[in-house]
Length: 179
Image 1 (cartoon, one colour):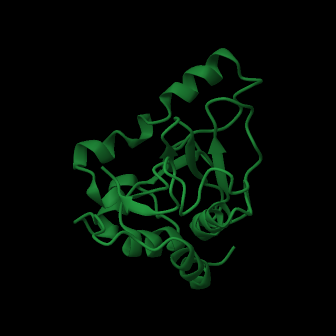
Image 2 (cartoon, one colour):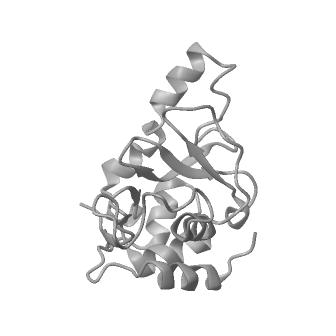
């Protein structure tokens, strides 16, 4: 999966960025050093256009540049609840969690507690998307960039569009800065 700016342009046409995006003040190099991890180029381009945001009052996407040194240091603990579940039921919870080799690294979440992220296998531009849902079995990784995945979701191609539309009161298909 190579970075293709057309996916970001398509997402922008479906759901424009917030009028006043929230951007972190750190440089990407600072984030990469703090994490000891380079993030995918499509994610960086997305954040530079949308900032830390929330789609349809449901999916939030993190801008790691907004985090303090202490918060960045605690990112490896974000998925500790999953590690605990894996320890108790390894047959049901099989994913590695970052910083374990090839582990899941979270880039966003839903208001319901589902985690969205990458499986950090290979080069960052090749990382597949993975959803760690709170209420059902693990899905297979999706061989798309984060932006391609968001286009599939926003267009209704991924899950249908029954709950997300410009006229929906609960989940309007808009993008706002994340609180």
